[in-house]
Each structure stands twice: as C-alpha cells, then as structure tokens.
Image 1 (spheres, rainbow, N blue to C red):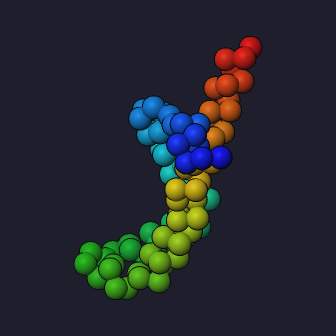
Image 2 (cartoon, helix red, strand yellow):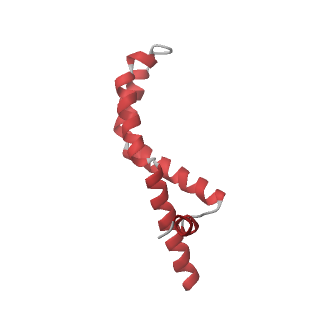
Length: 91
C-alpha cells in the first residue's frame, strides 16, 4: 500500500483527532494510575525540589504514559474509528 493511499485511509478531521488524543490520554492515565500515585506521593509538600527528589517516579510515570500515548497508538485508534465510520455508513 502506498504512502498516499495509507494517509488518505487514516485521515480524520481535526476535531475527531483531538477527541481521539483526549481519549488516548485518559486511557493512559488510567493504565498508569499506580505511577501517578507514586509521583504525587513523592511531590507532597515539595516545590522546586520535586524536580530532583522525584526524578525516579517522574521517569517511571513518563515511561508508562509513553506506552499508551505515542503515534502508533494514535494511528491504531484512527484506523478503528475509520472502520467504525465505514460500518455505520454501510448500514
């Protein structure tokens, strides 16, 4: 499949993409809840020192979030959305 054809198949409107990104972030936060809690616990009572005192927790949280919020995940969500739209149109 050519690049242009693939790009056309995965094209969605800007508002739809924004909604998919929001949904992706929501799923990521739910999946990484334990890391969010660890980071929040570390950050309690700190201001600037949170940057170096909670570096390990922040790194763990970012690694977890990145698993669920990257371009390949977004592209997969777009494909699913397009398939759902095609199924609705065929009814």
